[in-house]
Length: 146
Image (cartoon, rainbow, N blue to C red; front, side, top):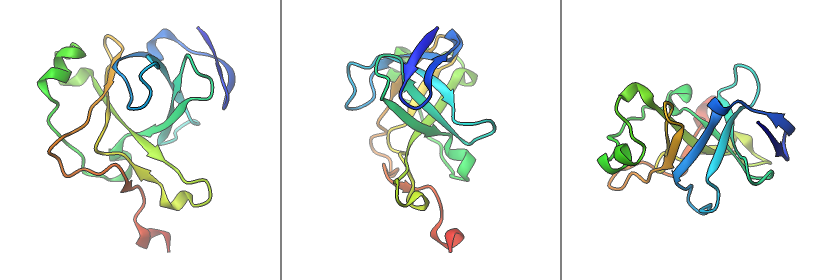
């Protein structure tokens, strides 16, 4: 399948990297299909690119890549809506915000992870209500940047 993107031009993607959003990403209700695109080989960052809107793509990552201790209980309603049967079928990604002028101040959204069932290619953004997670958790420790 070929899709047009602003960042990568026209790219060919495999069906196995496409995900249908059962519950949309907040603020993007009309966007139902995304594809996961490598930022560059062996990068900790990836792009979640809309297949409908060429200019819409989110930088995403695994919190664990940055040493963030991140675990939570997935609500049963989400497990049902994504048809999750086995924990090994779950892919958890978090949206990253990278300020153009100050990339060292990048943050990761831990409060509203993106949950994907890799078997059936369904996804959803989940708000972890009642948790102490933040939408703007610093991706890098300030001491390490000095």
